[in-house]
Image (cartoon, rainbow, N blue to C red; front, side, top):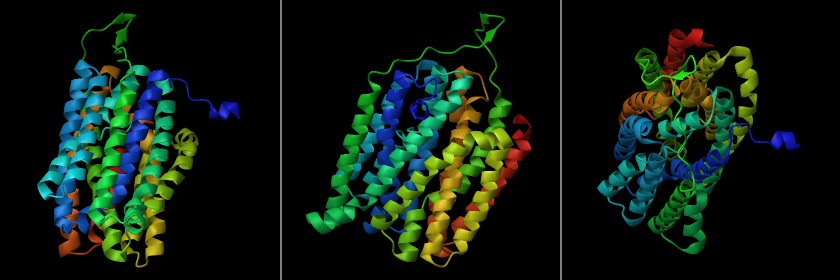
Amino acid sequence: MTKLLRLPEGVDRDIKLLTASMFTRRIVMGFLQVVRSIYFALLGYSPVEIGLLLSIATLVSAIHHITFGYLCDRYGRKPFLMLGAVFASLRMVLFAVSTDFWMLALGQGLGAMGEGAGAGQPVVSGYITDKTNNEQRSGVYSTMAVTNSIAATVGSALGGLPVYLQDYVGLDMVGAHQLLWWACAVGSILALVFLFPMEEPERRRPVSGGVEVGSHKMNWGVIARFSVVRATSGLGWGMIESLMTLYFFLRFGMGSETLGPIYAFSRFLSIFSYLLIPRMVGRFGDVNTIIGSRILAAMITTGFALANTYPLAITLLIINRIVVLFTMPIRQTFASGMVSPEDTATAIGVSNFARMGVRTIAPTLAGYMFESIALSMPFLTGAMLMAMNGALYWRFFRDKD
């Protein structure tokens, strides 16, 4: 039993502090994922306006990934991890003090500069790469995938709190949400506190014949191909995920008090799927496992778009989230090994910029489809893009397994 509970090699004191900080911020992000779009709708904003608010965050996040990735490769990881926590706190403060569209937009923009709370983000990936070797890295990413899933489960489960505060405490709709935005601000500040004792890792430099190499050429060809692949997944998953809670609100009249536990349940189940990663990768390889998950996600999303009852739609939602989340640590480990360790954050920042850059249009486009075409159209579009993403992984990286 003790062996099963033992942390993987490479999870030292600093990685534990980083994991604790990410855990706290992921609780906030899990809550936001369920509540935010519905809250904007309750304020009276249209699907297109809600899409614009989400697109603002996505655009700024794209810029954040490439700038923070480049700068932290040059000037260190810790300052940019701390800046991210500060920006995340500022978003919650703005949400708590105003319901004005432009103040919410400002909050979305600032908060997007602080969404690097996952192991796949450039600064976090750079820190992990500096602190671990190739053999340790997979275990660290898998550990963080589990802790992030637990945190997101907790945050999603709290999605029903606004209704509770309205029904049992007597707050109005805006007051209930704003009280919780203040609580999220405190959580983001706590995430910052965990970062203070962390040490800046020693930078890993390429070595040839026992001698450190002072300069090298970054493999821009690999980065460009990976960026194209990430762009299709960003747009595809953006079409599927960005307005999902709003879809259930408009299609089936389901609020955050119902969707919160559903999102929490799906994220909780994803924890157990991570136990299958070593067996799946050992049998099929990293790339083939990712390709299979993308094709399966496309098929499930198509079924979801055509589902006419909410029990079926919820079932397919849960299965699809598990399938997509399953490959997250696999893709993170693959991305970290593409280039030299000291260029990891830059490489992931560039690929994430491509992913988030095209994803910027997804929420607004989905909102337009909701209003002008059909509620199912964003999901059918997203399904085609996820299938294309699998095909591109096969085209560019099938020999990397």
